[in-house]
Image (tube, rainbow, N blue to C red; front, top):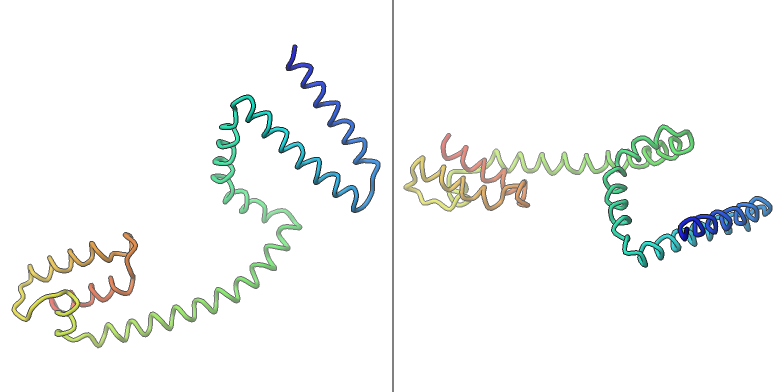
Length: 171
């Protein structure tokens, strides 16, 4: 019975708000809609907090975070959002081209550095002495890669240097 009374009260408040919002115009209408939404969200949060069901909000947030990438992909099919997406894409595309150019320059400089690695530099990178064996190179390579592998938060450059050192020493 109490739930029914609460439901009727909420419906009455929503009806009154809808009536007031439909009669107003312009900027005042936007403010009323905004404050109605904010008030509704706060009221729902208060009721959930009092009843101990606030974990529902946590689940909804987790679901929203999981579905957000898909929603963004689907939103680009809406005409208005599609125009915004295309405008942002053009701006982002120019930035992306500049970033790719910088990365290509870095990769070329790294490639030049790799081509010029000597045996002494390779020994120094792997921490070996001149009297090394093939097993020493493999073990040193494995040990170093475990420390600096990019999948474990290491540097791509250092991993490339270690791989190049192994190639130079094993020929």
